[in-house]
Length: 219
Ligand SMILES: C[S@@+](CC[C@H](N)C(=O)[O-])C[C@H]1O[C@@H](n2cnc3c(N)ncnc32)[C@H](O)[C@@H]1O
Image (cartoon, rainbow, N blue to C red; front, side):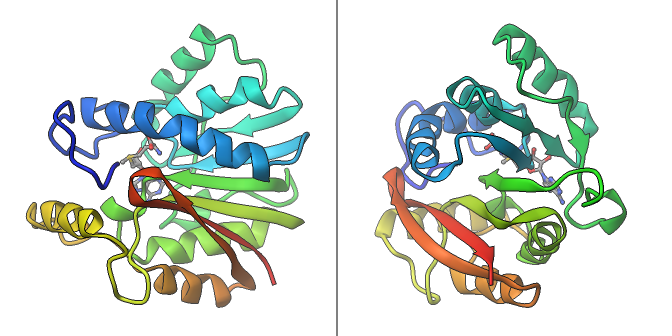
């Protein structure tokens, strides 16, 4: 999702296979890739939460040939699209998607199976309840390696303030849809949830279109 309206932007629709999500993903995937090139290890395991159509994970995978990528979502209907993209792009380092519902602990990965060097998520918070931060922190506490990190991309408020007018305008636009869980979340609420599970905010990276990458690691 983007905080800056643009003439070619389809109507806001968070359904993962919507033209809007495709448009937003095509727009943000290169800046995110550049940030991740600075952050990711050369090899290891990476888990994506809320992968949607698999746009990001399949775009990033060829740039990290020694990294194993694990897509996931709570909506199993998107899995065939993730697999089709993987096949189209011949990505041998992207696993079959798995179901992870951030509100359902019984779906969370088992640390006995695998630990992850990176867990990332793109554009989830503006269309999810803030309590989703607790799920992410608990998944991280379970399956993140000792020096691993969580990277959360999206638009956020900071200390109950908008960082730009365009983020405020974007928030008003999504709040107008009157879906109770939609709206920009505050970085400090994510931080509080993380701290309860031994995870701490380490870095806030400014991204284009008034988005951020929030990097969290173990305390
Ligand atoms: C706006 S889409 C973003 C998809 C993808 N990350 C992207 O940027 O293209 C939000 C995604 O979050 C997923 N999602 C929503 N609630 C979730 C939950 N509780 N657990 C896991 N995934 C969830 C949806 O199925 C959807 O794929």
